[in-house]
Every structure is written in structure tokens, then in C-alpha cells.
Length: 97
Image 1 (cartoon, rainbow, N blue to C red):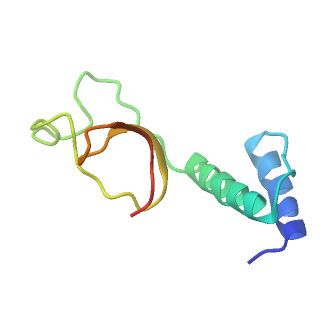
Image 2 (cartoon, rainbow, N blue to C red):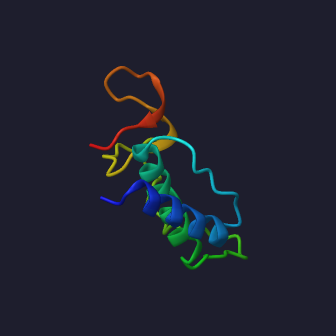
């Protein structure tokens, strides 16, 4: 586990890379969480972008055509618009697991 000072230094590096102002306030746990989130964003910036200039869908036919809803198991916490399968309530956050 990185120290608070190491997390602050890493946040400053990531802020430069992402073009942001580093927020170094908060507890050590909050800084650690922020570092993990910003590292994921920095990694995502280097993924190739698929562009679709045609009218053809990127998803092959037959996939996703049965229903508008799909049951998933989150590997990480997601901030999405979803529906709980047990209670039919709308969810903004899905916890891992």
C-alpha cells in the first residue's frame, strides 16, 4: 500500500497526463481511491477508438436483439443507470460482486 505522500505524487503525475488540477485533499484512503480511478482513466485513453462511418452496426447481428436488458455481475463498482433484478428499483451505483 502506497503512503499518502506517494499517492499525492502519483496524483500529480496523473493530473499532468490527464490535463487536470490534482486534488490532494482527503484521507489516505480517499487519495488511494482517486489514484486507482485516475490510473484507469489514463489507461483507457490509450485504448484504440473504433469508429464506424457506415450505417452498419458494430455489434454483430443477433447479439443484444432479444431484450433491452442484460443481467451482469460487476467486477468493479459501476456508476450506471440500471434496474435491480430482485426489486425492480432503479440503481445509480452497482457494487462489485
